[in-house]
Length: 79
Figure 1 (cartoon, rainbow, N blue to C red):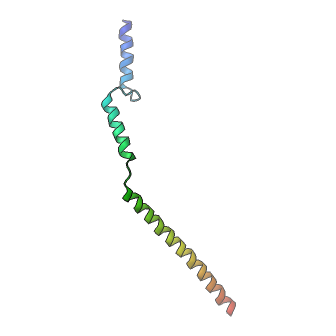
Figure 2: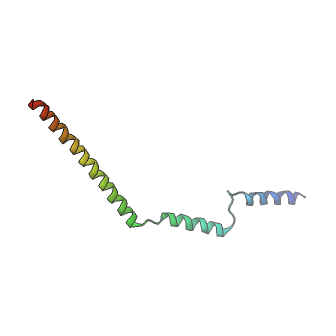
Figure 3: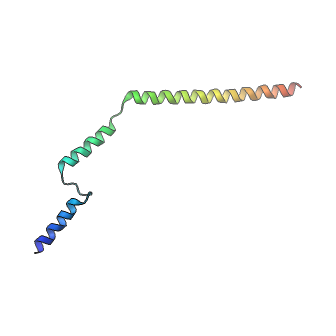
């Protein structure tokens, strides 16, 4: 009888998702992790290009604000 109670503990552990005893499920997890680790260089290059465009727009906006502030200040000072 003691053997039956111990065997049900082992069954309960097998059903627990923390205890993975099946090698197929382990292979599925490792292949999923490897698929996530693959990186497409074109995607990275597109992201870099978008960031550069964004920085260029921010710089143009900043220069435009400074130029307009200088022009407005010059116009006010000339009167």
